[in-house]
Length: 240
Length: 258
Image (cartoon, rainbow over all chains, first blue to last red; front, side, top):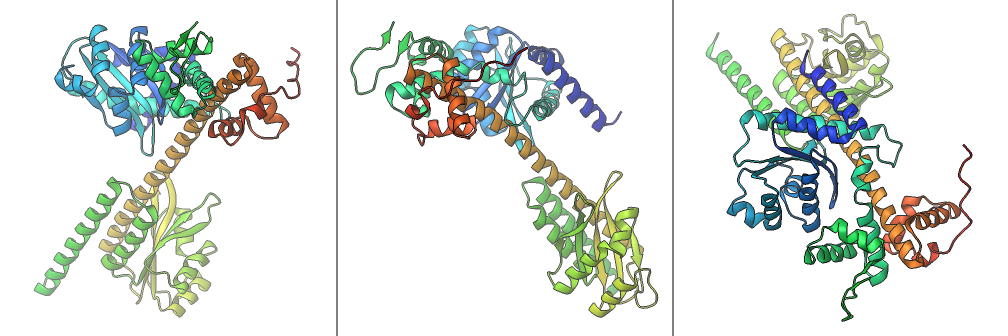
């Protein structure tokens, strides 16, 4: 079997796995790379959504990076390089204070983020979580790079099959998961007569100030139990 | 070998090494494929003592097109073009092997092509395939002033230069394909996101739920013969007022009968 063949076979298996249940894709990463947990996020610009996590506990960590706009996942996507945090020490704390706090509370000792990248395209990030501190072995690092190549191709080829302008089932979950966040930004844009992009920032700020995830704040807004005050008003926020 | 001949060999080896290092260096980073192929043509002329060189690629209809040449001289370009009917490039592309003709003056399998070459002052010609495994992508075409063609060593070097050109072409195509595919994915992602945002705007403005907001967005798009994504984008950008989309248009069509 040559490299070309094994590559194609790997992509085909990954694509089929993603089609049936995307959560399996992360479980497979955990097994193959021998790590505690894994999460796959597809991203476009500032918009992001997890496709899957190997364990629901990691969803909060991926979500937090979206909430506060900081974390290894975002850094890996932006720099197009893998980001290694073998210890969540002073260096990591100064880079991503809130992320490290939640990671430590979740019993995570080390985090590694790899961009899902191919020549000319980047589609997201694979984040690996380790219970214990310590660097990845050379084999783990090399395998992670190969896994990312397979995942990138699997994501792109899954999408190739979807009708033009729509997302393939499986990838759709990445947006569906955040649908309420986008809906809430539209609502706040009208409430406060501000651009949608600013509305999202307002929602993020509210979530952060109240110790909620962006998704939780958005759910309150969409169910009309929360309105955000206008900057010019001095009314307190109305939680009905 | 005389000292002179030794010096020439040494100079050529150095030039060859420099050429390959330079080309490989270019391929590592981002590169413009036309730029790389044009400089490869110039290197062919310099290293192989050819009078002119060009790189031809087959399009999806198997029509050979010049993509890089050592000179933009019109006679040279015509010589490439005419080979879609007959000539060494035509034979090289279809057989996938090197075609070398050392004396165009005395009898050639391509009379029309040979006559035009002689008129342009070329005495011999060579075509080297651009190969990718079993596929032939096109060829490198070399024109020499006198008869005699190329030495065996030159032919080997020409094939090596052609192989580098193939790598550049394949790499460039892979990058373009990936960019297009990523573009489609990002477009679909963005499209879903702006639709959700527009639903939020309409729902808030009309005190409806999200399903009703989506029905109104769709009705507006349909009645005005624009796409849903385009309507949503116009709302987000503020070029379309939410009050224009808000009121109920025609009632949405009944669900299809099962």
